[in-house]
Length: 334
Image (cartoon, rainbow, N blue to C red; front, top):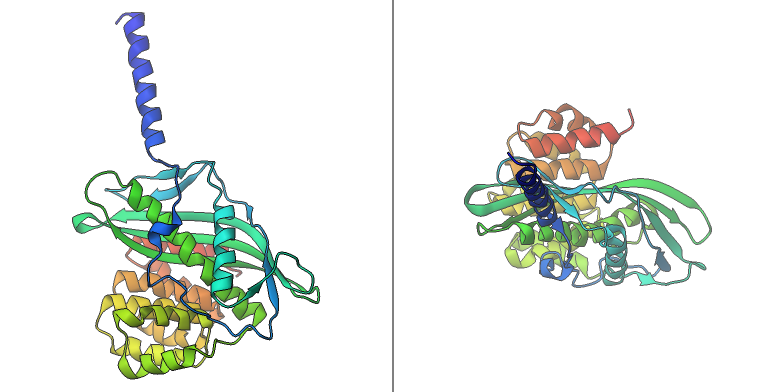
């Protein structure tokens, strides 16, 4: 082979590899395409009259911005990177600020006598796999090291872990749109969950008075597609009276999608009385529900909940569940 031909072939290979890498780089992040009735905050979640204002300060990007933002879990999917022009810490900050207002908080740009929320986005990624007939399943993760300062200057620090289960479909062409939507949905759905956890641990704003009638309606009529928005709001509110209602609905449900929604709401409630019922049904549940049970146990965060993750979920036959349980185990104190 002549030196010139060898050079041309080598150049072609380099260009092909470079173009392939660039083809799997997300350069746009459009959150609007993933907003729907189930994740839209349509009314106040909290009664914040006794809390005062909050200030959501810009988050710092502590994650590796050069690593894969989407990781393949096997045949049918590829790993993707995120263009460095997109800072997910900035994107998440704006989303949390918008969610705070929608959830009923009075927001301010000046700390003064307000609660301040700041922190570092320490890790963020989506693990993806392809299912049958073009279906795709995505398992989003976010680690946020938050710092919360009360109006009196008392400081609190905590690592919040966010887990999201996302499903969409690919028509058989490039998976770019579906991958972008998975990352966007992780951001959109994580923002109110971050605020719900901050409220549960520190602010302690009670549920909005608009929510108890919705809970009563859910109890009397059961879960339907039209009531899933209310279900999510009830979960985010942290209302302790909601847990028995949701657990009762979960026991009676024969629909996998409904059970997923109920378990996700129980996760956001963070109610300790859900640990035993969720642990008891773990081994017999469908894979999607088992992943969300791991999410719920992690959000509840009690020793009993962590014990269930360590002793059962880390041995799960499904790789996404096993990987997530191992991550939680390795980040938890002994």
